[in-house]
Amino acid sequence: MEEVRIERRASLEVLRAEASEELGVVVEERLRHGEDPWAFMEELPTVDELVVHMLRADAIIADGGRLPSHVRHYRVLRQIALEHPALTQTVWRMLDQNDPRARTA
Image (cartoon, rainbow, N blue to C red; front, side, top):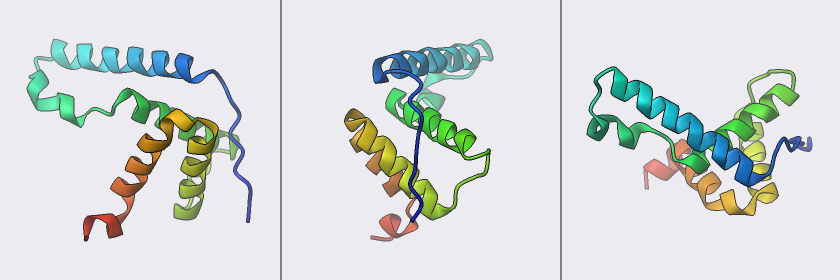
């Protein structure tokens, strides 16, 4: 079993600030293009979901840019939850959303 190592690039607070700023830019761009916020706001990830995506991207880069298998994806997200306990609920919710078995229940 291969161990998942994710290099820490910043504190969770800094990552959340970066993610919040990124989401703000996305919202502003969509508003400038005339989109209705009621139509797109629910499509956007939460700040914590974006942080998890950022950390997952860091793990992919650290692994030479290879996209992870389903098993490695699970391990990476699980490692994110272990390293950042405040993201645990978000990680498990994201895993449930990606698990086809969770939708058939």
